[in-house]
Image 1 (cartoon, rainbow over the protein chains, first blue to last red):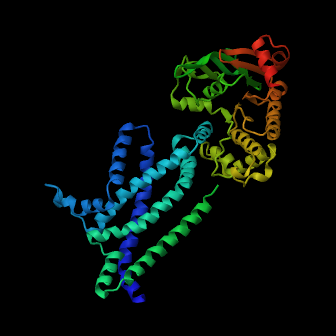
Image 2 (spheres, rainbow over the protein chains, first blue to last red):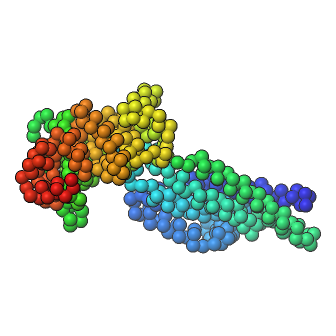
Image 3 (cartoon, one colour):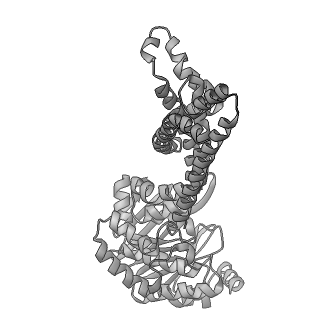
Length: 213
Length: 250
């Protein structure tokens, strides 16, 4: 079993790497998009609505295939869109998860009482100060359980990139099962994912407590 | 327009869709006066107050604050000028609208700290003094969720005072409080009235209007029916409409 963990650990850098890159870029991106989604510019709102529909309405696996294989076949520009496997995976994950985070934050934004905006206005806060000091902290707190949920889904979704040949954990797991004709490697992989999600669960519980009001 | 009027409202009107909530409302408030605005629900009292501080856009009329208009004949000045003029006013809401993620202390100092860029240490001193004034010296570190409704409203009053306003607007400040908590909020407001803070108070608290107000404005759906000293409104109302209302709420 320990030897198995050793073999699987070669894939951890891609699993953790994809997770970290997606979280670090998609969460702020989703936050930014949620403001546009709630803004008064109906043109941008419309474009964003289409983007979110596209990202949430198609399988992530399809998006992965599209970014890694599909783009290269576009006549004329395809040759400039060749990416290495991991970059294509990151791009697909960031774009996909930003759409989900955008919707989560939009929900959080809607939950902030309009009295908060009025109180901020009569106290003289401008729009930017109202957003940064008053609205966003409350919106983040409300959104936190959904963000946690999404991050846990992300941990497991990282395994999809094995389909475009990124050598992450599941890639080595399949190899080990085939080589040894023994399913124990599946269990080892499951243990890894369980530990990872357990740590995340604890972390988010702590954050929720800390941000409670 | 009289020079010592701190607020002048001329022919203010406001529609929500086809519903005319305010019809040619005109009144004025002198510096240091406490004016109570009473009347049945749906008469536009709160809407009128919200127009005064630019939370609601009027469709017609003029509002002068300390002699300067921010809306004249229904035309608004640029947003920046409106803001500057309205910054002379503070407002206290029915639902308190404290910032729930901030401590009581931060609720008090955030606006002067970030809007006026005042010194934090100085602000804390001022906040402590104001918390003492409203009887909540020990609550600086508490979060709003740990306070009773009456305490929340007293914090809201202190928060408004932190900006050093020339006048305070109260929008039904005790309407979401238990009767027993109403008293502690009204006591703070009476103290402010005695200190000659200019106040406009939309209220259903007839006791407060009668005892603490210098003047009472009675509004119904048709507009302002009376604008007089409390004694005349409460003890010798001219119109049966007012007499009926007062008999029904006391």
